[in-house]
Length: 184
Image 1 (cartoon, rainbow, N blue to C red):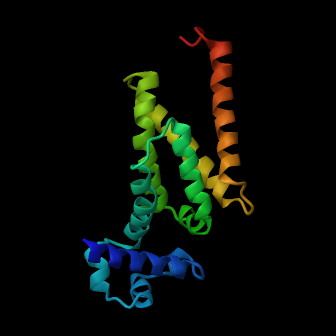
Image 2: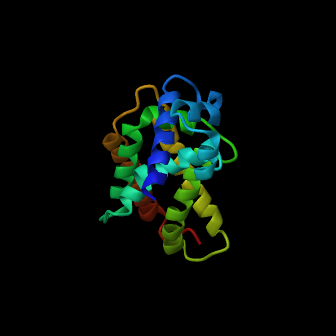
Image 3: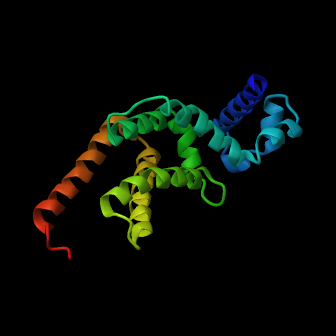
């Protein structure tokens, strides 16, 4: 397994280095392999395609790391996520701009769905429209992160999370104050 991770990390480093000078769409598997002096067979032994490599990078650099942590709240997880994206913003700006099947954006959205669905079910219960609520909050969250990172001079992660938290909590506070009991 150690050799496998060495190979995967070499491929990941090669992709990241290539992305410093080229758009993702202009990078081929052959380019990645040539950069780290491996053959295509080695690449395809570990990954389905270059999108799978990108998803592996996110999984190993972020998901595996946060799984080892205990968070006091979802806000702490969000803070870690945004800090990770901010620290790697050049790479993720490019990846969040790539849309379509197998894209990182699609992969990231699926991860957010799995996180949000538990909270949504807890808040709204198991109702018919549960998927609507999950999609709504997932899309809002993913769009907010994408918009933030794609800004030329995006604000630091801690500031972004502060504004996001303030926005969400103030909306819920207002809803509770103004509409409690009137929604049904």
